[in-house]
Image (cartoon, rainbow, N blue to C red):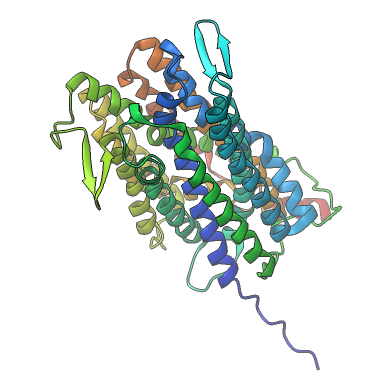
Length: 447
Protein backbone atom coordinates (compact mmCIF):
# COMPACT_ATOMS: atom_id res chain seq x y z
CA UNK A 1 0.00 0.00 0.00
CA UNK A 2 1.46 3.37 -1.03
CA UNK A 3 1.01 6.47 1.04
CA UNK A 4 0.42 9.89 -0.51
CA UNK A 5 3.50 12.10 -0.53
CA UNK A 6 3.64 14.48 2.39
CA UNK A 7 3.27 18.07 1.16
CA UNK A 8 6.48 20.07 1.37
CA UNK A 9 6.58 22.59 4.23
CA UNK A 10 7.90 25.87 2.83
CA UNK A 11 7.43 28.01 5.96
CA UNK A 12 11.10 28.08 7.08
CA UNK A 13 12.45 28.48 3.52
CA UNK A 14 9.94 31.30 3.05
CA UNK A 15 11.14 33.04 6.23
CA UNK A 16 14.74 32.61 5.07
CA UNK A 17 14.00 34.21 1.71
CA UNK A 18 12.22 37.09 3.42
CA UNK A 19 15.22 37.69 5.71
CA UNK A 20 17.59 37.64 2.72
CA UNK A 21 15.37 40.22 1.05
CA UNK A 22 15.91 42.42 4.13
CA UNK A 23 19.71 42.04 3.77
CA UNK A 24 19.54 42.99 0.07
CA UNK A 25 17.45 46.09 0.79
CA UNK A 26 19.72 47.18 3.63
CA UNK A 27 22.93 46.84 1.65
CA UNK A 28 21.49 48.38 -1.53
CA UNK A 29 20.36 51.53 0.26
CA UNK A 30 23.39 51.72 2.55
CA UNK A 31 25.58 51.60 -0.56
CA UNK A 32 23.59 54.44 -2.16
CA UNK A 33 23.69 56.52 1.02
CA UNK A 34 27.48 56.49 0.91
CA UNK A 35 27.23 58.85 -2.08
CA UNK A 36 26.88 61.98 0.05
CA UNK A 37 29.51 61.18 2.73
CA UNK A 38 32.01 59.73 0.26
CA UNK A 39 31.49 62.72 -2.01
CA UNK A 40 32.99 64.77 0.83
CA UNK A 41 35.55 62.23 2.07
CA UNK A 42 36.88 60.85 -1.22
CA UNK A 43 36.03 63.48 -3.82
CA UNK A 44 37.29 66.76 -2.43
CA UNK A 45 39.65 67.06 -5.41
CA UNK A 46 37.14 66.29 -8.13
CA UNK A 47 35.86 69.82 -8.74
CA UNK A 48 32.74 70.33 -10.84
CA UNK A 49 32.11 66.59 -11.44
CA UNK A 50 31.37 65.61 -7.83
CA UNK A 51 27.76 64.61 -8.59
CA UNK A 52 28.81 62.44 -11.53
CA UNK A 53 31.57 60.67 -9.57
CA UNK A 54 29.30 60.20 -6.53
CA UNK A 55 26.60 58.50 -8.60
CA UNK A 56 29.23 56.04 -9.87
CA UNK A 57 28.81 54.28 -6.50
CA UNK A 58 25.21 53.39 -7.37
CA UNK A 59 26.15 52.78 -11.03
CA UNK A 60 28.78 50.16 -10.15
CA UNK A 61 26.33 48.32 -7.85
CA UNK A 62 23.55 48.04 -10.41
CA UNK A 63 25.93 47.32 -13.29
CA UNK A 64 26.22 43.84 -11.76
CA UNK A 65 22.58 43.02 -12.49
CA UNK A 66 22.72 42.63 -16.30
CA UNK A 67 26.12 40.92 -16.09
CA UNK A 68 25.31 38.41 -13.34
CA UNK A 69 21.60 37.59 -13.70
CA UNK A 70 22.35 34.83 -16.22
CA UNK A 71 24.96 33.39 -13.85
CA UNK A 72 22.31 33.10 -11.15
CA UNK A 73 19.89 31.28 -13.46
CA UNK A 74 22.63 28.87 -14.60
CA UNK A 75 23.65 28.18 -11.01
CA UNK A 76 20.06 27.33 -10.02
CA UNK A 77 20.02 24.63 -12.72
CA UNK A 78 23.48 23.34 -11.71
CA UNK A 79 23.53 23.77 -7.91
CA UNK A 80 19.80 24.13 -7.07
CA UNK A 81 18.39 26.97 -4.99
CA UNK A 82 20.30 26.30 -1.75
CA UNK A 83 23.70 25.87 -3.41
CA UNK A 84 23.19 29.09 -5.35
CA UNK A 85 22.28 31.03 -2.20
CA UNK A 86 25.38 29.89 -0.34
CA UNK A 87 27.68 30.76 -3.24
CA UNK A 88 26.13 34.20 -3.60
CA UNK A 89 26.68 34.93 0.11
CA UNK A 90 30.38 34.05 -0.19
CA UNK A 91 30.54 36.62 -3.00
CA UNK A 92 28.88 39.15 -0.68
CA UNK A 93 31.52 38.54 1.99
CA UNK A 94 34.23 39.23 -0.60
CA UNK A 95 32.54 42.50 -1.63
CA UNK A 96 32.19 43.71 1.95
CA UNK A 97 35.85 42.88 2.43
CA UNK A 98 36.64 45.21 -0.48
CA UNK A 99 34.62 47.96 1.24
CA UNK A 100 36.84 47.53 4.30
CA UNK A 101 39.96 47.48 2.12
CA UNK A 102 38.99 50.75 0.40
CA UNK A 103 38.97 52.68 3.67
CA UNK A 104 42.06 50.91 5.07
CA UNK A 105 44.02 51.61 1.88
CA UNK A 106 43.03 55.28 1.85
CA UNK A 107 44.05 55.72 5.51
CA UNK A 108 47.35 53.89 5.05
CA UNK A 109 48.23 55.46 1.67
CA UNK A 110 46.64 58.95 1.62
CA UNK A 111 48.86 60.08 -1.26
CA UNK A 112 47.85 57.22 -3.59
CA UNK A 113 45.69 59.14 -6.06
CA UNK A 114 44.81 59.17 -9.75
CA UNK A 115 44.94 62.38 -11.79
CA UNK A 116 42.02 62.62 -14.28
CA UNK A 117 42.50 65.93 -16.05
CA UNK A 118 41.99 68.56 -13.36
CA UNK A 119 40.43 66.00 -11.01
CA UNK A 120 42.27 64.07 -8.28
CA UNK A 121 40.65 60.81 -7.10
CA UNK A 122 42.06 58.51 -4.35
CA UNK A 123 42.69 54.89 -5.40
CA UNK A 124 40.61 53.87 -2.38
CA UNK A 125 37.52 55.26 -4.13
CA UNK A 126 38.01 52.83 -7.03
CA UNK A 127 38.43 49.94 -4.59
CA UNK A 128 35.09 50.97 -3.08
CA UNK A 129 33.52 50.98 -6.58
CA UNK A 130 34.83 47.44 -7.16
CA UNK A 131 33.39 46.36 -3.82
CA UNK A 132 30.09 47.95 -4.78
CA UNK A 133 30.04 45.89 -7.99
CA UNK A 134 30.89 42.64 -6.18
CA UNK A 135 28.22 43.08 -3.48
CA UNK A 136 25.80 44.07 -6.26
CA UNK A 137 26.66 40.79 -8.04
CA UNK A 138 25.79 38.89 -4.86
CA UNK A 139 22.50 40.78 -4.52
CA UNK A 140 21.70 39.97 -8.16
CA UNK A 141 22.16 36.22 -7.74
CA UNK A 142 20.23 36.28 -4.46
CA UNK A 143 17.27 37.91 -6.18
CA UNK A 144 17.39 35.42 -9.08
CA UNK A 145 16.74 32.80 -6.39
CA UNK A 146 14.38 34.73 -4.12
CA UNK A 147 11.86 36.13 -6.62
CA UNK A 148 10.78 32.87 -8.30
CA UNK A 149 11.01 31.00 -4.99
CA UNK A 150 8.62 33.40 -3.26
CA UNK A 151 6.33 33.32 -6.29
CA UNK A 152 6.18 29.52 -6.46
CA UNK A 153 6.51 28.25 -2.86
CA UNK A 154 3.06 27.40 -1.49
CA UNK A 155 2.10 29.01 1.82
CA UNK A 156 -1.51 28.42 2.82
CA UNK A 157 -3.72 31.51 2.58
CA UNK A 158 -1.36 33.53 0.38
CA UNK A 159 -1.07 34.43 -3.30
CA UNK A 160 2.21 34.88 -5.25
CA UNK A 161 1.95 38.69 -5.39
CA UNK A 162 1.28 38.74 -1.63
CA UNK A 163 4.38 36.66 -0.88
CA UNK A 164 6.44 39.03 -3.01
CA UNK A 165 4.91 41.95 -1.12
CA UNK A 166 5.86 40.34 2.20
CA UNK A 167 9.40 39.89 0.91
CA UNK A 168 9.29 43.47 -0.32
CA UNK A 169 8.22 44.61 3.16
CA UNK A 170 11.32 43.00 4.65
CA UNK A 171 13.36 44.63 1.88
CA UNK A 172 11.86 47.97 2.87
CA UNK A 173 12.73 47.46 6.53
CA UNK A 174 16.33 47.15 5.38
CA UNK A 175 16.13 50.20 3.12
CA UNK A 176 14.45 52.25 5.87
CA UNK A 177 17.08 51.65 8.55
CA UNK A 178 20.06 51.89 6.16
CA UNK A 179 20.22 55.73 5.92
CA UNK A 180 20.29 56.02 9.72
CA UNK A 181 22.89 53.25 9.87
CA UNK A 182 25.14 55.20 7.50
CA UNK A 183 24.74 58.65 9.05
CA UNK A 184 24.07 57.70 12.67
CA UNK A 185 26.32 54.67 13.23
CA UNK A 186 28.96 54.60 10.49
CA UNK A 187 29.55 58.37 10.57
CA UNK A 188 28.26 59.06 14.09
CA UNK A 189 25.85 61.82 13.04
CA UNK A 190 28.66 64.21 12.09
CA UNK A 191 28.20 66.79 9.36
CA UNK A 192 29.09 65.46 5.92
CA UNK A 193 32.00 67.84 5.51
CA UNK A 194 33.58 66.30 8.66
CA UNK A 195 33.30 62.66 7.53
CA UNK A 196 36.45 60.55 7.97
CA UNK A 197 37.17 57.54 5.73
CA UNK A 198 38.52 55.64 8.76
CA UNK A 199 34.98 55.44 10.15
CA UNK A 200 34.08 52.81 7.53
CA UNK A 201 36.27 49.95 8.69
CA UNK A 202 34.62 48.52 11.82
CA UNK A 203 31.01 48.58 10.48
CA UNK A 204 32.04 46.69 7.34
CA UNK A 205 33.93 44.04 9.32
CA UNK A 206 30.79 43.63 11.45
CA UNK A 207 28.69 43.05 8.33
CA UNK A 208 31.18 40.43 7.11
CA UNK A 209 30.75 38.56 10.43
CA UNK A 210 26.94 38.70 10.17
CA UNK A 211 26.89 37.32 6.61
CA UNK A 212 29.36 34.57 7.61
CA UNK A 213 26.98 33.48 10.40
CA UNK A 214 24.12 33.46 7.88
CA UNK A 215 26.12 31.11 5.61
CA UNK A 216 26.65 28.72 8.53
CA UNK A 217 22.90 28.76 9.27
CA UNK A 218 22.04 28.10 5.60
CA UNK A 219 24.25 24.99 5.55
CA UNK A 220 22.01 23.54 8.28
CA UNK A 221 18.71 24.63 6.73
CA UNK A 222 16.57 22.43 4.50
CA UNK A 223 15.73 24.39 1.35
CA UNK A 224 13.74 22.16 -1.03
CA UNK A 225 13.60 22.86 -4.74
CA UNK A 226 10.24 23.69 -6.31
CA UNK A 227 9.25 21.53 -9.23
CA UNK A 228 8.07 23.15 -12.45
CA UNK A 229 9.97 26.41 -11.96
CA UNK A 230 13.26 25.52 -13.63
CA UNK A 231 14.68 23.34 -16.35
CA UNK A 232 16.18 20.09 -15.14
CA UNK A 233 19.93 19.67 -15.45
CA UNK A 234 20.76 19.00 -19.10
CA UNK A 235 17.22 19.81 -20.29
CA UNK A 236 16.98 22.10 -23.32
CA UNK A 237 14.26 24.74 -23.43
CA UNK A 238 12.42 24.75 -26.74
CA UNK A 239 11.86 28.50 -27.06
CA UNK A 240 13.94 31.59 -26.48
CA UNK A 241 12.96 33.32 -23.27
CA UNK A 242 12.73 36.55 -25.28
CA UNK A 243 9.90 35.10 -27.36
CA UNK A 244 7.54 35.84 -24.45
CA UNK A 245 6.48 39.42 -25.23
CA UNK A 246 5.08 40.18 -21.79
CA UNK A 247 8.41 39.16 -20.22
CA UNK A 248 10.52 41.20 -22.67
CA UNK A 249 8.47 44.33 -22.01
CA UNK A 250 8.53 43.50 -18.29
CA UNK A 251 12.34 43.65 -18.36
CA UNK A 252 12.10 47.17 -19.83
CA UNK A 253 9.47 48.10 -17.23
CA UNK A 254 11.70 46.92 -14.40
CA UNK A 255 14.58 48.90 -15.94
CA UNK A 256 12.55 52.07 -15.49
CA UNK A 257 11.11 51.01 -12.13
CA UNK A 258 14.46 50.33 -10.47
CA UNK A 259 15.94 53.36 -12.20
CA UNK A 260 13.36 55.82 -10.88
CA UNK A 261 13.23 54.14 -7.46
CA UNK A 262 16.99 54.53 -7.05
CA UNK A 263 17.00 58.03 -8.58
CA UNK A 264 14.87 59.23 -5.68
CA UNK A 265 16.31 56.98 -2.97
CA UNK A 266 19.95 57.72 -3.83
CA UNK A 267 19.79 61.29 -5.12
CA UNK A 268 17.13 62.95 -2.95
CA UNK A 269 19.80 63.64 -0.32
CA UNK A 270 21.98 65.40 -2.91
CA UNK A 271 18.94 67.43 -4.04
CA UNK A 272 18.16 68.26 -0.40
CA UNK A 273 21.74 69.35 0.28
CA UNK A 274 21.54 71.67 -2.73
CA UNK A 275 18.28 73.17 -1.45
CA UNK A 276 19.82 73.60 2.01
CA UNK A 277 22.69 75.60 0.54
CA UNK A 278 20.21 77.79 -1.36
CA UNK A 279 17.78 78.36 1.51
CA UNK A 280 20.27 78.14 4.39
CA UNK A 281 18.11 75.63 6.29
CA UNK A 282 15.07 73.41 5.90
CA UNK A 283 12.13 75.57 6.89
CA UNK A 284 10.03 72.55 7.84
CA UNK A 285 12.24 71.96 10.89
CA UNK A 286 13.96 75.32 11.07
CA UNK A 287 17.45 73.81 10.83
CA UNK A 288 19.44 71.27 8.83
CA UNK A 289 19.48 68.44 11.37
CA UNK A 290 17.20 66.57 13.74
CA UNK A 291 17.99 64.68 16.95
CA UNK A 292 16.35 61.27 17.31
CA UNK A 293 17.11 58.74 20.06
CA UNK A 294 19.97 60.94 21.23
CA UNK A 295 21.68 60.92 17.81
CA UNK A 296 21.96 63.92 15.52
CA UNK A 297 20.74 63.11 11.97
CA UNK A 298 21.00 65.28 8.89
CA UNK A 299 17.69 66.22 7.26
CA UNK A 300 18.80 64.82 3.85
CA UNK A 301 19.19 61.39 5.50
CA UNK A 302 15.75 61.85 7.07
CA UNK A 303 14.26 62.49 3.63
CA UNK A 304 15.79 59.29 2.28
CA UNK A 305 14.46 57.40 5.31
CA UNK A 306 10.95 58.79 4.82
CA UNK A 307 11.07 57.73 1.17
CA UNK A 308 12.16 54.17 1.98
CA UNK A 309 9.83 54.12 4.99
CA UNK A 310 6.94 54.97 2.68
CA UNK A 311 7.90 51.92 0.63
CA UNK A 312 7.75 49.81 3.78
CA UNK A 313 4.25 51.05 4.64
CA UNK A 314 3.07 50.50 1.07
CA UNK A 315 4.42 46.96 0.97
CA UNK A 316 2.80 46.10 4.29
CA UNK A 317 -0.49 47.29 2.83
CA UNK A 318 0.22 45.45 -0.43
CA UNK A 319 0.75 42.15 1.41
CA UNK A 320 -2.94 42.22 2.36
CA UNK A 321 -4.26 42.87 -1.16
CA UNK A 322 -5.64 39.44 -2.02
CA UNK A 323 -8.25 40.45 -4.56
CA UNK A 324 -6.64 43.41 -6.37
CA UNK A 325 -5.06 42.32 -9.66
CA UNK A 326 -1.37 43.28 -10.10
CA UNK A 327 -2.30 45.21 -13.25
CA UNK A 328 -4.70 47.46 -11.34
CA UNK A 329 -2.10 47.96 -8.60
CA UNK A 330 0.48 49.06 -11.18
CA UNK A 331 -1.86 51.46 -13.00
CA UNK A 332 -2.86 53.21 -9.77
CA UNK A 333 0.61 53.54 -8.28
CA UNK A 334 2.33 54.80 -11.45
CA UNK A 335 -0.35 57.45 -12.01
CA UNK A 336 -0.04 58.85 -8.48
CA UNK A 337 3.78 58.70 -8.49
CA UNK A 338 3.81 60.70 -11.73
CA UNK A 339 1.58 63.38 -10.22
CA UNK A 340 3.70 63.71 -7.06
CA UNK A 341 6.95 64.02 -9.03
CA UNK A 342 5.42 66.70 -11.26
CA UNK A 343 4.38 68.64 -8.15
CA UNK A 344 7.88 68.32 -6.70
CA UNK A 345 9.37 69.79 -9.88
CA UNK A 346 6.76 72.53 -10.03
CA UNK A 347 7.33 73.63 -6.42
CA UNK A 348 11.07 72.76 -6.45
CA UNK A 349 10.49 70.89 -3.19
CA UNK A 350 12.29 67.63 -2.31
CA UNK A 351 9.84 66.84 0.49
CA UNK A 352 7.16 65.88 -2.06
CA UNK A 353 9.46 63.19 -3.46
CA UNK A 354 9.48 61.39 -0.11
CA UNK A 355 5.79 60.52 -0.63
CA UNK A 356 6.55 58.74 -3.92
CA UNK A 357 8.01 55.83 -1.95
CA UNK A 358 4.54 54.84 -0.78
CA UNK A 359 3.52 54.24 -4.40
CA UNK A 360 6.80 52.73 -5.60
CA UNK A 361 6.37 50.11 -2.88
CA UNK A 362 4.42 47.40 -4.71
CA UNK A 363 5.58 48.05 -8.27
CA UNK A 364 8.35 45.42 -8.19
CA UNK A 365 5.99 42.62 -7.13
CA UNK A 366 3.33 43.70 -9.62
CA UNK A 367 5.77 43.88 -12.56
CA UNK A 368 7.50 40.58 -11.69
CA UNK A 369 4.19 38.74 -11.26
CA UNK A 370 2.89 40.05 -14.60
CA UNK A 371 6.20 39.27 -16.33
CA UNK A 372 6.48 35.60 -15.29
CA UNK A 373 2.77 34.80 -15.67
CA UNK A 374 2.25 31.39 -17.34
CA UNK A 375 5.97 30.76 -17.94
CA UNK A 376 6.17 27.38 -16.13
CA UNK A 377 9.62 25.77 -16.46
CA UNK A 378 10.92 29.01 -18.02
CA UNK A 379 10.39 30.85 -14.71
CA UNK A 380 13.90 30.55 -13.21
CA UNK A 381 15.50 31.54 -16.54
CA UNK A 382 13.04 34.43 -16.76
CA UNK A 383 14.10 35.53 -13.27
CA UNK A 384 17.72 35.70 -14.44
CA UNK A 385 16.73 37.65 -17.54
CA UNK A 386 14.57 39.90 -15.39
CA UNK A 387 17.68 41.00 -13.50
CA UNK A 388 19.01 42.58 -16.71
CA UNK A 389 16.39 45.30 -16.30
CA UNK A 390 17.71 46.18 -12.85
CA UNK A 391 20.63 47.92 -14.59
CA UNK A 392 18.24 50.87 -14.71
CA UNK A 393 19.33 51.45 -11.12
CA UNK A 394 22.83 52.08 -12.48
CA UNK A 395 22.06 54.04 -15.63
CA UNK A 396 19.23 56.41 -14.68
CA UNK A 397 20.74 57.79 -11.42
CA UNK A 398 24.08 58.30 -13.18
CA UNK A 399 22.34 59.99 -16.10
CA UNK A 400 20.46 62.14 -13.62
CA UNK A 401 23.73 63.15 -11.95
CA UNK A 402 25.16 64.14 -15.36
CA UNK A 403 22.01 66.17 -16.11
CA UNK A 404 22.21 67.85 -12.68
CA UNK A 405 25.82 68.86 -13.37
CA UNK A 406 24.91 70.09 -16.88
CA UNK A 407 21.96 72.16 -15.60
CA UNK A 408 23.79 73.23 -12.44
CA UNK A 409 20.98 71.91 -10.25
CA UNK A 410 18.76 68.90 -9.53
CA UNK A 411 15.30 70.40 -10.11
CA UNK A 412 14.71 69.57 -13.80
CA UNK A 413 16.66 66.31 -13.65
CA UNK A 414 13.57 64.72 -12.07
CA UNK A 415 11.87 64.69 -15.48
CA UNK A 416 13.71 61.42 -16.02
CA UNK A 417 11.52 59.93 -13.28
CA UNK A 418 8.37 61.13 -15.07
CA UNK A 419 9.41 59.32 -18.26
CA UNK A 420 10.01 56.07 -16.35
CA UNK A 421 6.63 56.23 -14.59
CA UNK A 422 4.84 56.71 -17.90
CA UNK A 423 6.47 53.63 -19.45
CA UNK A 424 5.39 51.52 -16.47
CA UNK A 425 1.86 52.82 -16.91
CA UNK A 426 2.00 51.66 -20.56
CA UNK A 427 3.21 48.23 -19.43
CA UNK A 428 0.38 47.90 -16.93
CA UNK A 429 -2.29 48.84 -19.49
CA UNK A 430 -0.97 47.14 -22.64
CA UNK A 431 2.48 45.53 -22.47
CA UNK A 432 1.74 42.95 -19.73
CA UNK A 433 -0.94 41.05 -21.67
CA UNK A 434 0.04 37.39 -22.26
CA UNK A 435 0.06 36.25 -25.90
CA UNK A 436 2.09 33.04 -25.44
CA UNK A 437 2.39 30.65 -22.47
CA UNK A 438 4.75 27.79 -21.65
CA UNK A 439 1.81 25.38 -21.46
CA UNK A 440 0.69 26.32 -24.97
CA UNK A 441 4.23 25.77 -26.30
CA UNK A 442 4.39 22.29 -24.72
CA UNK A 443 1.04 21.32 -26.26
CA UNK A 444 2.16 22.52 -29.68
CA UNK A 445 5.39 20.48 -29.48
CA UNK A 446 3.56 17.33 -28.32
CA UNK A 447 1.07 17.61 -31.15
